[in-house]
Image (cartoon, rainbow, N blue to C red; front, top):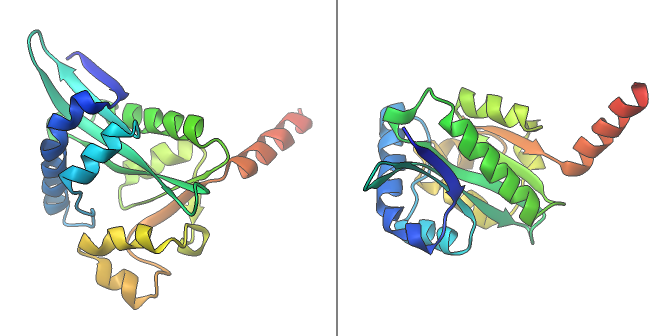
Length: 192
């Protein structure tokens, strides 16, 4: 396999429908909440340089095998890495980690002072997030931007979120505050 993990461009919009199908099929198989994505929205993220794509490049062809994009909320104070997906035939090889690390790098370079956050039901994603400096967070610590939470409407668990007034759901909230991380790094350096 010759997998390339890169920032997506307008050259990759042709994969938007495949990516959305991959996300939807994964949601059905897992039976847990994964919000549906619209191909036009995925295309816009690619065009804005706010998406990571993983391609299996064979001799004369390439196939999309993974994807993730970044979104900003509350006037760029919060950034979410969303829509992380890996083709089921390419799982268990560290590809999700490569994509997530690349999305993290892109997020930090574009929005260095923003808090990075996400919602997930996936233990492997939680482990990757922890490696990147995220910690579990209550939903109150995440953005209060209504348009972010509106994205959860297509999830099978949306009724839980609404019943609890956006205080909890089956997803785990995780956050990485660069100011918190810097303070912890400074404290660890002083102890040495």
